[in-house]
Length: 83
Image: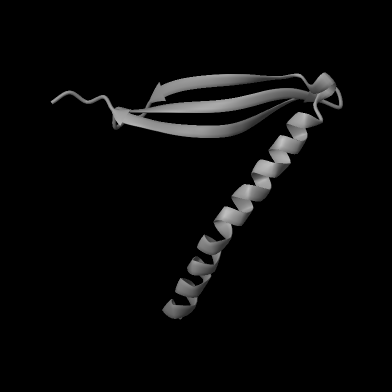
């Protein structure tokens, strides 16, 4: 039974890069098909409970008369803890 769970976990881990690539391609397609090709990028920086900085990137665009927002990227920075 444990071996079967390990196989499933391994299988899922092998699929993650393929799924990520597919999602990335879908988001790019959505942005390119935005109204007039216009979009905006929003950056938001915060610090988590371990004092590590995080930079989040979102893209906003209008498609079929509706505003859409997609999370694009998370960049983890260094810890800002003082000793």
